[in-house]
Length: 192
Image (cartoon, rainbow, N blue to C red; front, side, top):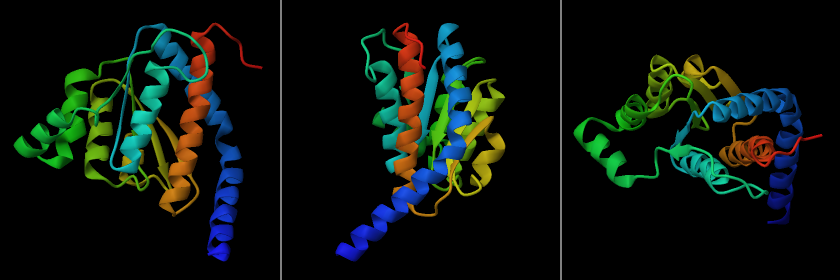
């Protein structure tokens, strides 16, 4: 077991070190989120499985707080309402679960962020495509080449790993880094 644990930690460290190339994108997307919240826009997030948990985590940091006392920010996770998700999946298809909600809610100026380890889930791809059609700005948290979801994303964070745990660990780092930028702005602080 010790060898396995050492290998897992080494893989995490290598993947985390590789994420340094994403820091400029984090700053730019953080600035984009701040500008969107300044003009009253909403952030919509979604994903499947562990990626749904990442989407909810991001929303929680924005509606609640990350590290500072400040006002809640408008963020909605589309997987949080099981009734709506299962209604759409039953009445239409699972592939439409995010697209139907995005079509109903997202407007020009809003931001739609999708979390996926592969970028190949049909419901994520159609959700992002619909967001773009509605005039929202799209952000993709994925890995590898981003799969088909990448073609519908205005901004892309790609983790260089094929292992789901490593990808999700770095997605958590990225959502925390973005939360820090937005949190500081909402609390009236300037980050150094």
